[in-house]
Length: 207
Image (cartoon, rainbow, N blue to C red; front, side, top):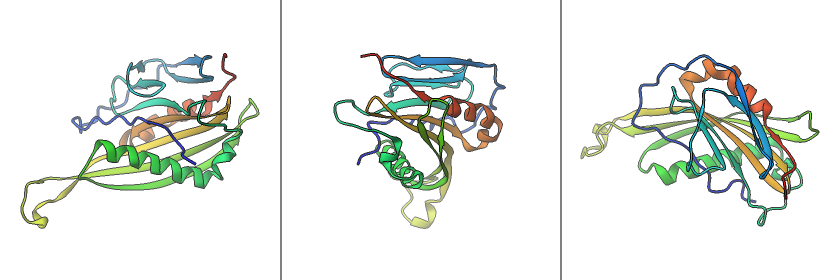
């Protein structure tokens, strides 16, 4: 069973010096009654059009920090529950595999390290079960890619990211809320990011 669908990962590889995260200034609610989902997001984040996901918001100060929502095609999926993916650990492995597949399509010739950090399930106040998955992916590039000798091509840490996913099912579709943040910003932003995760709900879509 394929987990995701033409996903998007934003890579700001040209900006290695991360700007310090700005303090939270409150939240706004995004409601999509057509596709059937809702969540809260930091009100200073901006929506980016044409990013490839169903919806995409970005922190204007930390350009590598963003959120998006992916959803399966209603014509090619008949999900009844998030448990159709298997237990949370199995779903986490599928999420990580999807992230790595997307990275391979955008970055070639670099080394990656990846780990599933945590998995969990919860029943929200809407009575639906949601899975939560956290993974870390590090990407390494060579300092001197044109060097003839392998020992002269020294790998350097290109970026270090935390990815947080919330998976839910409704309207016979699989939904994924994705959050991406640099690992060195995560602790400062963690409370806000977890509030976004906790707010995600799949609702009945408008036919």
